[in-house]
Length: 384
Image (cartoon, rainbow, N blue to C red):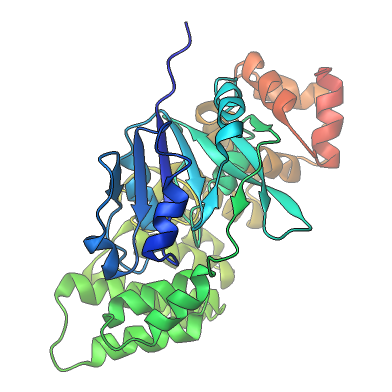
């Protein structure tokens, strides 16, 4: 018997006024048990909302983290993502519910950005799903869903956008110029928007003020500096700052940033050591993941570092370790094909099935869309 659907809707209300909030709510109120407004302006705290509505966690400069926390607190088993002013029409709701009962991890809906064109975006997620919104400027579940080749359905229920709603980006830019917004929040927001020089400037201003921030805040600001330097591919400067951070506060975030810098410096052996320690859980979990979870991407970094050193056996062993635990992680499969470009499908299959269940291998390749040439050759040999 199918579990009844309980919907949670996460609404990006950052660029919305009070009237727009009510306009977006009206088509949903009868069908949805839990509506979360992702607030940005302080005015949201004064808006009287119906019982099924609540405000999301306060914005601290990280859109990805804000959505992660809101997603973790959802009460429904299906989540719908809406931008400010978007609606799903009442007449389409039954079709959306029927599609959500299908064997998909997510649904892509056509989103109308203007009167002439639409494009597909992942807007419906099943819960529990092993995916967060890490590494996204806004809520974006796509990278991890696609990385694991999760089944994604397409339906013709269109998401309509109100012409009266402005883009969230100018609102955020105004906040970056607002003297009342703390520098730490500005620095993190600029980093997520890939404005690396701006992020460094705000982080340095916060670190240089007379009333020094707490020790924890200093570490967070220096980590923002290091990640901004990494974004600018200033690998030597990133590494120098990471050395200082690691001597005082060896967090998983700092170690991951250091490993990326070492890869840029082609110091592969040191990078592999850090990635291996991260994959083993020695430093705990990262707070600011980009993108995805911890261990499988850390192990993938180690496999790439070993391949760069031509230590193919070590790279192969790590990839087998990843795929035995995460058999649908596509990037690990792609790395395996890079490591063994000359392997015949039969030979590769024999190697893989020592550690990975044949049924999992077949299921992964049956899920694949838009395969690369080596993936397609192997899939054709499998006959899926």
